[in-house]
Image 1 (cartoon, one colour):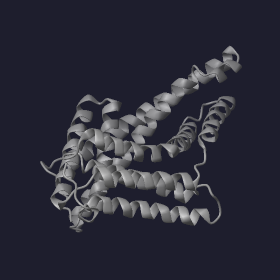
Image 2 (cartoon, rainbow, N blue to C red):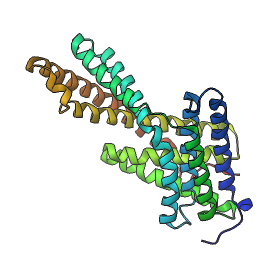
Image 3 (tube, one colour):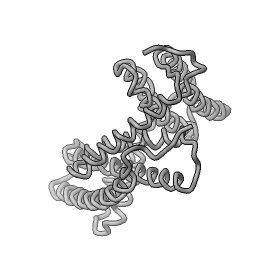
Length: 294
């Protein structure tokens, strides 16, 4: 791919804008600590999501190996806090399930809550601000060297690529009803959402409604993914060494409780998928993306 100057590439400019917002949050955080604050961690996650979405706009034109190499740098940045977020969400969902399932005995509740509290504790690892800054500098350097676009029309084609990819995956998810298909759809729906937010130019009621529906779909697909992650953790508990500390009666009580929570999760997933499928019909009824970019 022919390279242009950084001034002619609108995507690197948007990437720098996102990185600058994260740098500011880290500067504010550093006033009290060399570790990232809760606000800075949130900004890091937002920045990572938007950077990965921007990278997909190169996909119709760029060598996949080069693009994936740059994307791995962004992914490494996000992964440093992915475990913490997953552990927090799993704990919150278990609390919801326990509240919904009033028949669980107290000892079983305590075991489950303690298990997920420990997950949160182990996941709560701190990243130093200096380390994150070094990662960001390396990322922008590689991005500038390896990826450039010269025409705004390229952004438009990239956005259409994301829309068509999302549309295709949504159809597969609706037909198969398989969790992994919804997971694949989730990633591209969110890419398309973040791209649309950063690039769209025609702010009107119709566009706002469309983007709002797209955001709701992204949230639903994210929640579905959280349900699936918790399902996997509950399955692991059944074979976890901690379970061996209980006698057979207590172990059976835990198995029954997990079975009840899994049934609760299955119902939440069913309702979630039904809502997703309704939104699929509205959002992907167009042959092309209805979002017009700058």
